[in-house]
Amino acid sequence: MGDKVFKIAAAVAATYVLAIIVLMVFQLINGSSAIWSKEGISFLTGSSWNAVEGRESYGAAPYIAGTFVTAGLAMLIGVPISMGIAMFMSELAPKFLRTPLSFVIELLAAVPSVIYGLWGIYIFRDYVRNWIEAPLNSTFGNSVWFLSGAPFGLDIFTASLVLAIMIIPTISSISREIMIAVPNSQREAAYMLGATKWEVFKMAVVPYSKSGLVGASILGLGRAVGETMAVTMLIGNATGSSAFPSSLFAPGQTMSSIIANEFAEASAGSLHLAALIGIGLILFIVAIGINIVAQLLVSRVLKAHEGAVLA
Amino acid sequence: MITIEQRAEFRKHFRNNIPTRLMTDRIVKGVVFCCVVVAVVPLGSILIEVIRNGGPVLSVDFLTQIPGAVGSSQLGGVGPAIQGTLLLIGLSSLIGVPVGVLGGIFLSEFGSNKLGNTVRFFNDVLAEFPTIVIGLFAFVMIVLTFGSFSILAGTFALSIIMLPIITRTTEESLKLVPVTYREAGYALGIKRWVVITRILLTSAKSGLITGIMLAVARIGGETAPLIFTILGSSQFFSGLDQPVDALPLRIWRLSLLPYNSSIAEGWGAALVLIMIVLSLNIGIRYIFLRKQGGGGGRFRIARGG
Image (tube, rainbow over all chains, first blue to last red; front, side):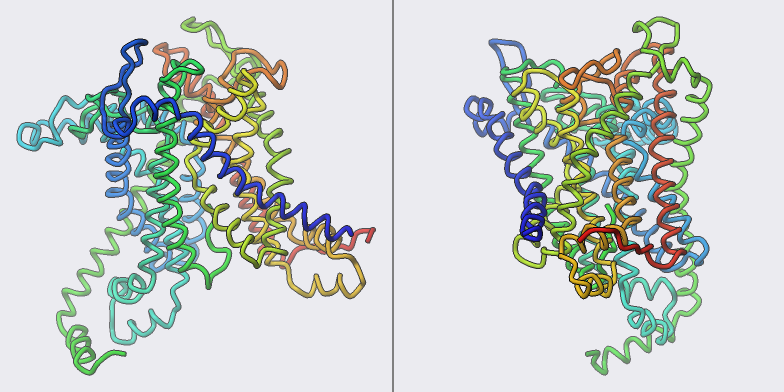
């Protein structure tokens, strides 16, 4: 009797997660239905953003583009660095350094995103503007389109850099687990042939763990896509068609940042609110797609190595 | 299988260009080391700046008083924000911990079937989900339904965020309990649910606490969902259906204001928040290390059954 009740209670608690996800889909569709019936497909492709009553018009294309540009740039910078860190921690670092180093990297993940934002606005931004953006802009500004504009510090480039810093711990700690899960016989075979550490990594570790490493990177992409606070504080918050990413040094907007920024101005029941919830629905679909792919890739590699990944 | 031609190629590759290959190896090692430095520098910079800018602001008044008028040169406090954050953590744990632990028990003890696999998979998906979407969901679910921003809505959102973390760590630490413990319990004729709650849970205690603290550290710094749920307030807690303040939310609002005093308060609040979050994380590390050094969980048979 007690056993049955307990099992049912546990099953109910476990199904709660599924119920939440289903309910989330339902509520987001419900809450944004007004915008889909008014704008239709042009909500996805349009770029005008006008909340003035009577002339309301909403298009989410610039923010979708902004999300993918910032997340893509963050991946471009963050993934190689993360792989380097993971390689250092699993292959190169002396034993006494491994535990403290992985602890430090995990602390990087523990810092709340709003503190990244605060640090980004008041500290990091000045360094980026004066040491990276200004020189690049004055040298290449006229010839390379994505380096044009007046560097201000609050723009797509700074937001992407901070995003890159934020996804490094995710990608590197999962990649490290995956590299550790590679059987030592693989490495020993390569060493036996006379390979150097780098060649062992390149020829034995990477081919064996490739799909897991891709999965780890995609998990990082998922985090970059959904990240809100630091991006909101650093991206400069353009709206409408000017938010289309035209240059690295121009202010932009992402899906999550426009929701956070404009939420306070959207009154209950308005089309504006429906538009923001609609963007939330798009973000939901993008994030769930990314996460499902990443989980499938990572869990397949780590299956033999239970209990390795800690979010 | 490697063909003979391939083997010959390998042999040729590894015999030739030894100086170049050693050079490449050394360069790669240098680059990899630089990667580590690049990741550690921001952490150091964040910690230093938060302590340098936030340290001078800290005082008993700052920790206990309500925020001052916007724009005044006098420094206000973050008392309501600290109270709100602690309340949110406590209330979310009231929902998140029991449901998460029960879910983890289900996955570990009854979960080797289709339902278990589905839950496990979506649990992992939810763990990495954008928290802003969860906040919007809580807004539509609770705030729009009940007509007001409230600490309850915030609790709902944060408990969804902590749930998958607790479920996963519970499942993993229960699986680490040796099967002999279960068998010993069954041999004594103890019912299964008593074996689980009295024997397995006590043996896996440190793993459970790790998971809970990890989840608490995570929601303590969470900002995005709070914008849509608790709204923020400059007053102390005044009822479950009222808006409250929280440290991350207060930091965000302060950072948007153009006054020096607000920015100083923001750094002070950031110092308080980072101390809470980092001490939780270091505490987890301590428990975890002690567990590894101590060799196995402590085991005691409680009354009952």
